[in-house]
Length: 321
Figure 1 (cartoon, rainbow, N blue to C red):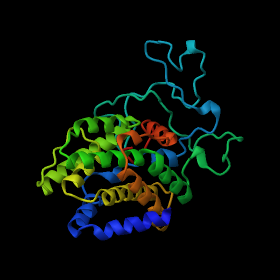
Figure 2: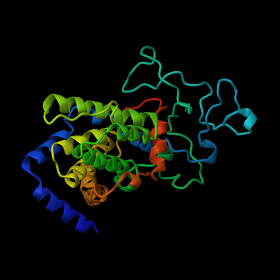
Figure 3: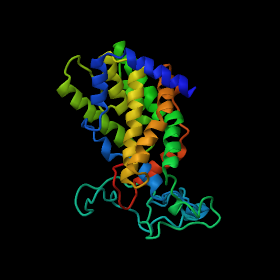
Figure 4: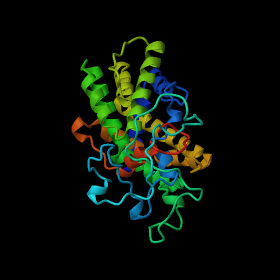
């Protein structure tokens, strides 16, 4: 199946016009001003030891200020996790050296996690992998990252993005409305930071597209998720759907491979090898997504969503998500 996927991708590329290929290379380049370098898609949490390794470390929502008896309240008889901070966080953790004194306050996450200990967090001696994974880290090597990204592509956020991309491409070609699709894409974001990631990149892509390629005009709703914006642009410029999907998913993989280098999970050689190793998965996913409908939406990459939520309360971080 992998060989068939690669051969099919090659045949599509041969038929792709040079002008269309140039647009894909430009729009999905790291140099295109969408700020993709600042997003890790929850990978930072997965690599930083954010996964609890003992049952008592599983986070429980803090009780409401009114003491309404929700999860985590004393009346519910649920023991609070030992990693919950004693006092609620009042602002978002610092990002890339930002100070906490100034700037607007952000909405508090229901999970207020205390700063990590110097040793990378406590481990349960009986937890699987407790002796070889620092602090409950889920992604510690190139092999871990390959499996992580393959899951996202096959049945996680990468797959959902591909389905939304394909639907936006079709609606743009058929002069259909994108407003409802954009709303659905935003609703599928599994956390506040995932919503931020997709809508800010979508807005930046739309702005750059209008400035550099004013014709044909592409009318995008606001806010517009990133895959909807790129899919609609490819449809408006008559770029082959399957080729566009493959390029979009490869850019998704390459961006997270680059993030893994900055996080110290992989080196440059391993990151490049990882992108190459995932080519069959990218082409296979692109082929499936090109034939998909909105009924095929759905994610089973639960740990990725949890890592994205936990990133909201990291004490310090390199990435916005």
